[in-house]
Image: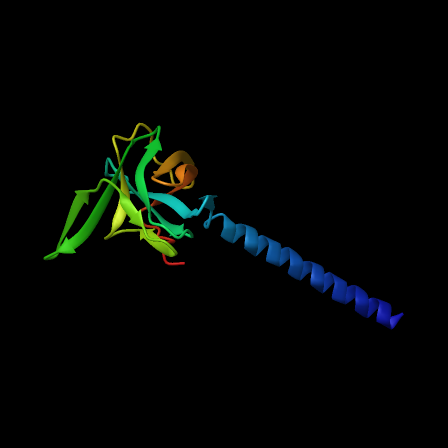
Length: 164
């Protein structure tokens, strides 16, 4: 009788641990969504915005698992104009420049993040609200059109999810 009670306690502990593991895994998935086509994997595409600004920026990590360079050529969304940019700090000032494409080297990851390559969203046709997801397409030279969902985050969110 005592061994049956002990086994039941072990089973209950195991089930509680399993439920906790499922909860932790599913909650981390919500901030680490990814999309893949062919050799291109797009990790956590997200948009950060400031309420007072009329524009927003898109960030993510793109992994090229192939043996050849691919290039991000453009972004298609129905809620804004989307352009590829590069920014850097020169002499204490941030300089931004539009670029025609972003190279994704073979067997490497390329982070689109502040003070580097990113997506600029301007002429927004909707209000950005933290927590919503917005559909779009990322157009690559070799991988073609990849559907993605951009999660909207406020500028105050400190994790840009590009260093994982």
